[in-house]
Amino acid sequence: MKISVGLAFVLLLATAGHPRAADYPKAHAGDVVLRDFTFRSGESLPELRIHYNVLGRPRRDAQGVVRNAVLVMHGTGGAGKGLLRPEFAGELFGAGQPLDATKFFIILPDAIGHGQSTRPSDGLRAKFPRYGYRDIVAALHRALTESLGVNHLRLVMGTSQGGMLTWLWGEEHPEFMDALLPLASLPTQIAGRNRAWRRVAIDAVRGDPAWQQGNYAVQPPSLRTVAGMFFLVGSNPVLRHEAAPTLGKADEVLDAYAADFVAKNDTNDILYAVEASHDYDPGPALEKIRAPLLAINSADDYINPPELGLLEREIKRVPRGRAVILPLAPDTRGHQSHTFAKLWKHELGRLLAESEP
Image (cartoon, rainbow, N blue to C red; front, side, top):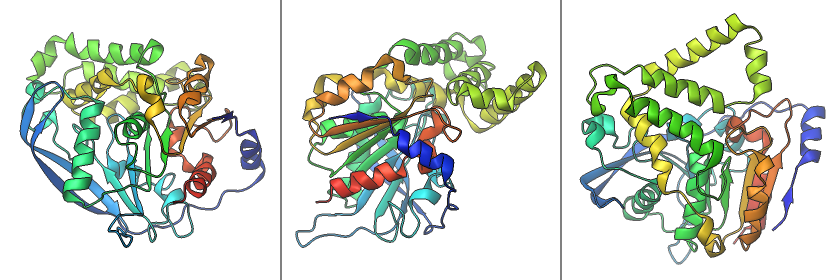
């Protein structure tokens, strides 16, 4: 139950070259349909679709228990396929890498309201059931056990929202996994600055007359405000200034980011995704986590700043917990450091070795 800074690793990054991201097996997409899904709000849907991408194949032991399944969960507004990129999958899923897809069965689901899973934009709009993080965990657990035949997980991991879901998995299904890796998250209720940026985004949409209670014909202007908040919290100030060193360049970069964000997102979907953190609070039950857990944050994370000391304090309550904070370095990317696996994949390898059944 100790926390380390990982300075030696950062020095190693500064003095050693990085191998190119490796190729990895092709991912295959599919859908699970959960019948009569009831949300914690009491609302329900007759069918809830969970989309996923998978790499590799499940392997069972003599008792029929799947021993090589890895659940990888994305961040707010993302999708499973978004992690199939060189800086993440290319550092983890290739031959000889920590999650070699020829050895592991890797599952990349889309959370409720995200990607190609059932979303408000499918038709219900603002009449979509109000979902929370615990609903996402419940849906993924059903998808794994009822449709994908996965009765055990070698590892549960996730980035940002997915990191928060990882803490909840450890509490709600403590015997279901061998190890846990939450990235860019804190095991406490959303509060302070983290709650503030979310409220700004939420209030911008709900207070926008063009939102029309969710029944807009074109994306309302407030979606651009939401884009600005994502831009603000997603990186670190050093990188932002390097990319935008003048007033004019800053406006140009922000305008380009916002235009791309608006083109790729639906306002109701993003609103629900940001609001979904309303029920996140693993704090009261951290002692229930049984599997080895490694929490990794970065010192330049605007959303989860290390000055709060929350991770250092709370990790002591996790029976087999350990935490690492990556110092600011040329390769860190603020909150987005969670996707740059070269920064922390050596720690993942250590976790897998320590948690070998």
